[in-house]
Length: 483
Image (spheres, rainbow, N blue to C red):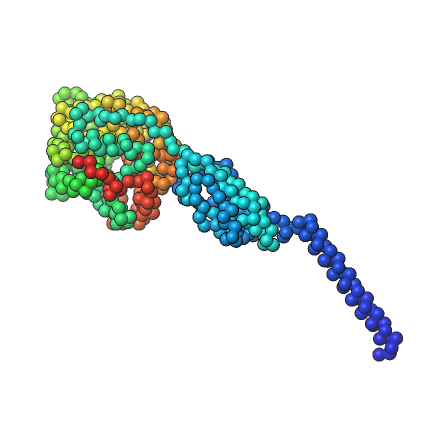
């Protein structure tokens, strides 16, 4: 290469170097300008949303995790955690993950407004620029107003233990709910045992069913053998009982396999050749076969209830339930039990007939529960014949919707306690309670021959664990002696 060529190459090299230096200068100037103008990566993190949202209402009390979401990845160095404050509650763990900051709170009280303050500098962007102060205000759930309910049982001169149980229910109402289980068909605590196996706790109340009254005594069921009930009561558990009242399909029927509690709306036995002709309106007609059957059954039932009364065992008594069936649900709706078949006036007369029959027999250990279907006020027997209003709910998985039913009943029967007298496949009890469904007690229905709560069709293991872990749910071990 000659000297002139070397000089030319050198000059071109110098030119490229100069160009690179100038380019670098402008690039640095551009970055500097971005820094001065707060470029995207150097902006302070900005809050996009929060859970719960600012000014949220109906937030759960107790423990709560607040999540703040920013517009960029953030960090929360531990030195700044003292800048997270909330008056009247306790701030626990503060942590960051990508764009989210989680703040754990505890000690939140019901019916109270809170203001969570995250001071400037607690949250940092990826270039350590401080996020401005964040304030999230929210209100916890209201404590529903529970008006005074009837102080006395409707049964005259009640068994002292019955009045004690009722007084206890009244004291707890609105602040605590009693757990309950239903016997597997009739005369056992099989479901209560499943609950204890899964949760380590027995329900506060065990319900039994006199469904096989017509068959008892028999080699497989004898309601005069009260040991299972006595043992439960001795262990401080409360006792409840239902009665799926089976009657003959037709006058003179002696085949017990042709007894039923389903009315004559096309219901047939396995042979498909009969319908139930028993009619409640005929119960009050002296000499009718319905009158004879009803008297005989009530006499038998009174004798069984008297066995418990003689042992000072009160019974939360729930007969003649769900009387209206679908009458008010849709056009052409029908009662699904015979006791509602002839309408509201006949049903109320039947309820009072039973009430007075037992009173005349000296039965005074009953706490009477009437089951509503929310639109059936015409079926209500009256305050003088009812102590507690029950509601049976199935396949309703929204806590808000369950609470709406509670509120609807409360609006109609403010003078009475309200219970979730049967349920199955419903929202977790904590969700119902936290949306103000303050049931006096709750009772999931049994699953026939279930050996575990896993996969239970009405209330599985998760459902019961949720319920039994709440401080507002009472189990058998929580109860005082009411003897």
